[in-house]
Amino acid sequence: MMDQQAFEKLFGSFDHTKIGVVGDIMLDTYWWGSVDRISPEAPVPIVSLQRKETRVGGAANVALNLRSLGAPTTLFAVIGKDAEGQELKKLLKEEGINTNYIHESLARVTTNKVRVMGRNQQMMRLDHEHTNDISDIESEQLLANFYAFVKAEKPSLIILEDYNKGVLTPKVIAAVIAHCNENGIPTAVDPKQKNFLAYQGCTIFKPNLKEVKEGLKIEIPSIGTASLTSVHEALKAHLQHAISFITLSEHGVYFGKESTHKLIPTHIRNIADVSGAGDTVIAVASLTYASTKDMELAAELANIAGGLVCELVGTAPINKEILEAEVKKVLVK
Image 1 (cartoon, rainbow, N blue to C red):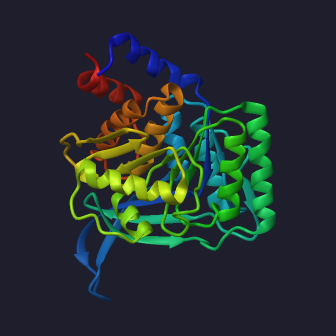
Image 2: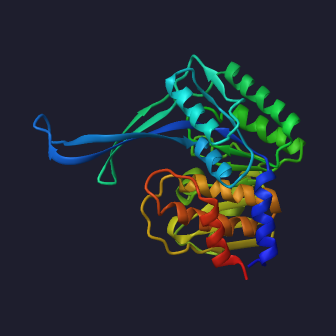
């Protein structure tokens, strides 16, 4: 629990807490329509399109969540020099996210995930993307942009957001974390399986339960503080990181650091769609930690925020006013 003064100070601090996000950004395209009949050509539904919508996805959605909370946010990524990339940058700029350091490559396409929606359900997804690692030249440009930003802006925290689309290569991961450690900047990692154990020396490591099982090749027969603390120790043996922050879906979240370990149960919600919940969780946890260095408070807020966005259909950022109201109700004494 926290008092009213601490609550107001925390949410007020977000507006001047600079965060950088490095990783795979993408365009999420939604085609909304109605389904009234089956095609005579094949046993598939016919979707009568009524509207199209584009949103930012991947690491860009993490940035959008940060910006929705007021944080000055800068993205580092490699996209294609194409119409989808321009649309993605336009959407980001409209939200006030700094896109000056995004590198456009003629050798890649901008990841675009097209979702066909009927009756508020996803019926099909079409992915247009390159998932091979970025080239050495692209890596060098990305890192040069990152170093220039750190020198000029002195951010409070850097998030590495991996969606297995090739931006976070072992070289980029090691260079970003090393540079942050040299400059006293904490790092938060949202990993995927491919480079799961490449994030040595990071500050906060945030996998979900499935990623932990696959990344460490272990079974976790029961969800409890003792079993998850064993997982934290196993992760630490590989990563030498400071904090494990594991999301557990309907079981809530767990964090472990030094001698502090806690399992925080989820809050009951009317779940509509879990898309993007992980992006919200890493954004809220990272921003709160950057502002307070209090991981327990960061985990509590992130747990609340993740549940709130699951009540929405599709990928959508956290609403600051709604989060404030919910945090005040749950955590403020």
